[in-house]
Length: 415
Ligand code: CTP
Image (tube, rainbow, N blue to C red; front, top):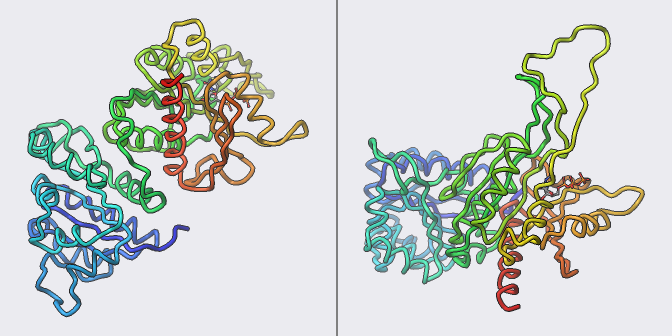
């Protein structure tokens, strides 16, 4: 359960204003106190009654309502987080200029908490030098301006400028509540390759061997890397129906072999590879081209053969000079202790055998790792250093992993 915080949702006047409703609902369901500040134009798209019913509070665009309560000062002062979604080109311009001509922009000046802008506009407007300058100004002042998603815009055109999935915006805001400094632009220009999800090893046209990976942790790494400025490719296996993260190039891979082929091909253009996928160690030796029938009393045994270890193959390719020597390689391990040793004992052995630079370790026995939204564990480094990861959202864990990878790259550059 998350701690209840005070969140202001600013809504700009764009067609994506209706998506703010999902963000409001998500925060209210999480137990937060939500105030909605639409602009006058936003109220042309979604009525005040909708925002008021969803948030449980009156909403207004006007500075001159409830004057005795001095809302233009108080709402900002009391906020723990302000999320502006959608942030239109006009709203970004007014915020960058420090205007205070409605309740939302006045609040943006009085708030001292993290500010998150989720832009949504046509590609031409997003790419216009005026908007680029406004985004740069807001970022320089410490605000987070989210990279928009690419895809279908209003009408028939498509390109960067779509509001990211509301769940993604909500998760980024939640992360800023946990760690206000979690989204620096420190990965600008860094090329990051991430794998996520499970693999499906077919048995016949309708059946497969799979695993419980939801893909949430790897998606969080990809999403955050993109929002920290990196150029991200995500090789995605099977997931729990997750939406593509904004500003991330998503490549699908169903089986371990397909994932291995994609990763080894793409790793040559990467500065950092994060292997968060749960890759099947084995596949069926023979895949039936027709559906296997339950003939006879006893089932036929399934004979397995090994899949290549993608992580170990990456390290081997780097050692042979087929990948740049400074590409940083991060593995993940979900471990349980057993009679031979505890989680860390197995994790240290795995780090040594895989030869990667960092290993992110989750202890499966403590209710972490699979199909849940929180994780905890350790990050082990090849130089023997170890740091623990306090229990937190998968986004918070992802931000720590990227911090460690970023520090490692900086270290490589010094060496
Ligand atoms: N991995 C991989 N290729 C495989 C299996 C695993 O690249 N065929 C990667 C995973 O993406 C992860 C790391 O290796 O980053 C650890 O995965 P895990 O399944 O825990 O390791 P295994 O080597 O399979 O060890 P175990 O014997 O515990 O199953």
